[in-house]
Length: 237
Length: 237
Image 1 (cartoon, each protein chain N blue to C red):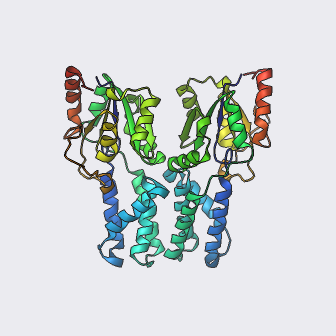
Image 2: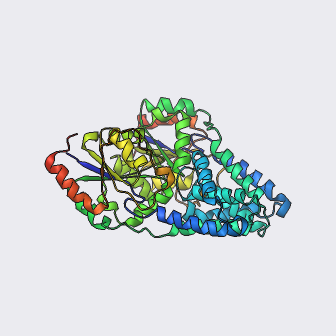
Image 3: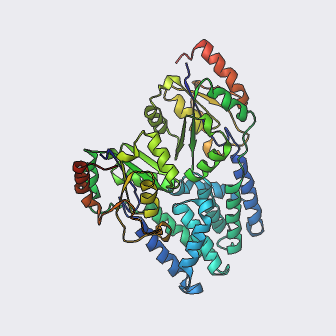
């Protein structure tokens, strides 16, 4: 039986990647007069990956990577005013209102009546706290955990911290890499709900032919029905 | 009786502000050819304060504020290569080894034998996690909490979360504003250990003539003796 359902936040409960995508397009437009569109996005992604050990995830690190990319792809020709515009774009991102995904506002209160709910989100503490606070969902979660990365070790530590048996734990998220594979590897269950845009970094390679034990749903509105069926038939561990 | 001692981290257990101070000097040197020394530090501080709602505390926000300041004080004349140098300075900051303050390596293990210990640090999750991990002190703390700000509400929530009576709680830190005043206001006890450099933002104005109930120590090496005396005489609530 599933007792605790944990949710990823960005692109599972509210829109996030779409905002990054839009800002990247504005960033590309800003650089168009210097270098056209050629390879800017690839260079940005490479810079972001190289900077992960320095900045981790979140808007501030993304912004520093945009600035570095702008300097690199323009061969140092980018003007200070353009760099200030990149910073302004980032400030708009930070101030952007939280838009819940469809069904979230109904599903979370409903499930909170039958299950313990957790929020487990990866990213910048300052970004995430603000989004969580303005989501209106805080009262429905027993625990909120903001982590710098979602590895099997991080999930193992969280389950131990709250005394949760992995067999009674189910994680819901949009990222195979961060939300599904590490959890399934611990013997817990997982529900994958793809978002229409996925950051390349979060795409997990599927290895081998063995089926991986998780359920895929089209949208979160289908989750209460699934939980009802899991409850009736037993989780099977 | 004090049962739980909580420690601030930056400039209480290890050096931090001195590193910011050194980087600020290099930043000032970088701008010297554009605008001399005049007002650069004041402008940086003002930019940081204006950016707190966007970036919170930590190296990444500090870096974005340095870049904005550089653009502003040079009237947009700063070159992209100089901005890249600011980013390199920030990366060096992030990679700088953690240097424990004198006595910390002895005092923390000693006190962990007689008291529950907590670490309560304000700042960027990614910065703080890395410093905590490399400090070697993790095994001595029962709980580690990284928060975006240290207000009375934040302390109240933490004490409730762990079921700690404020009268049995003592906070140790270098910042009157963040570590001492909010805690004393909850009826808990506090030990102020000044660091030789204090960020202007952390300097709290002392209001009125009423004495505020906290102890000031010259260095953390004196803390076990103080705890022994508090234990013998009772905390007095």
